[in-house]
Image (cartoon, rainbow, N blue to C red):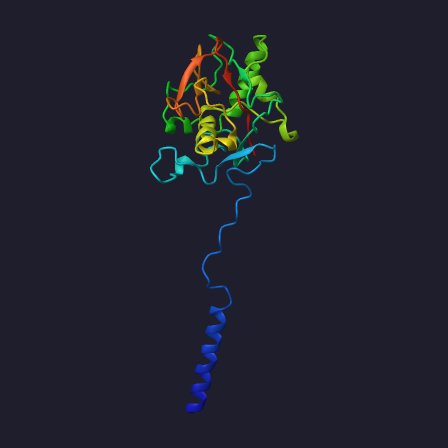
Length: 244
């Protein structure tokens, strides 16, 4: 009888040991690796600077909150469907000797219906425009065409077809903010942006006469949006963006 009990316990131990080593109890599977990470070359030959699944710490509190991600696809305000990443055109995207061309916004004193943003918006306010660049560009292209204007910032971005992609657009202030902080940051060579208070134009509007810009590297304005006249000098730098 004792021999039978010992044999039975031995079988149970062997069975439990096999279960523990089978992988079924080894904890959750590791998350699948994201297909792109910041700094990678995107499908359009540009530089990836945002992953919507991960998001970005706009308020710099050390935590990426739920309203700081899923910004592109409409869950948190954006209007781009089916996209998870943003890429910026590479330096010299326009085929000249300069990393970026200068252009005017255009449409002075015209209400474009692009959603307005506040003057000198905070990073949190900037985040509300992530995912709006594409729709802003479509609105601006129509308005510029109807007004007989050419060579303006939105038109330069729309005409770009880097990597054979034809869906490049004029970035919103939130998208431009991400480009500035993530790509420029401490590694300006990665983005190749101009160190100038002239600033980069966004497709976001302050009012009928002014648009929002960001000076990427100037110590007075680094990462801080402010406004500029839409259609008077100086012209500002322009860098296209696309989502995928």
